[in-house]
Length: 275
Ligand code: SIN
Image (cartoon, rainbow, N blue to C red; front, top):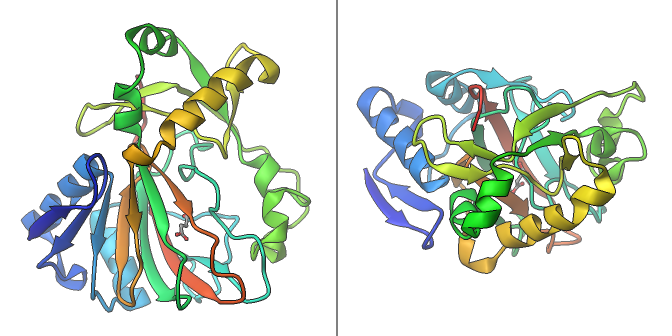
C-alpha cells in the first residue's frame, strides 16, 4: 500500500489496494490511514454494490440513514443524487454526517457511480488543524462547552432538503433528531483533539440561546473552512473516498447544473465520542 498526501493537513491517496479483496492487516493499515489523514481516496476500484456492502461489513457495522433514498436497490446504500433538472444538491454546505446521533457514525465510504463531465468535487477540512489553530484561551473556553446537534430543520418537509432529490423521502412525520456532544472531542483511536461543531447540524451551545451562540459558532465555522485546512477530491470513474466524520467536515461542490451526479454512500457505525 502506497500513501501520498493530498494536502498539508488532510487527505491521502492510496494506491496498491483493491478494496474488494482487502482484509486483515492490510484493512487495518487502511483504517489507520483514514483515522490519521481524515479521508483516503482510492482509484480504479470497480466495486459492485455487493462488494461495497461486503467491504463496509468487514470494516464495521453499517448505519442506515432513514432520510436517504435507497434507489440502488440495496437498503445499506444511500444514494446521493442530483438530477439534471435540480438546482440544490445534497451535502452542499460544510457538515459532518450524523452528528445529530447519540453515537455519531464513524464515517462513510462514497463510491462514484455517475459523474458530471466537469465539477462535482468534494472538499474535506481537517478538524484537528482547526482545533490546533485556536488560541489557548479559546481552547480552554470551548473545552467547557457542549453543543446541541439536530437535523430536523434539514429533513423536515419544507426544510432545506425538500429542494433536493430527498424530497420524495420526506414523509411529513414529526422528526426529533437531537444529540448533545462536547465542542472539543478526542478522536477515539488517535487521541487527537478535534473541533466538533458543524454549520449544518449544530444549532447552539447547551445552556446558551441560539442568538448568544451564533457569533462564536460563526467564528468556528469560518475557522474550520479555511482554505489551508482543506483538500479537494476530484472524482473519476472507479474512485472511492473513505472519510472519518469525527476528524473532518466535507462539502459537495454544486457546480455542474444541468448534469446528473450519482454517488453510493455507506455509513459506518461509530463509537461513543467524548472530550
Ligand atoms: C455527503 O455529503 O455525504 C456527500 C458528499 C458528496 O456527494 O460528494
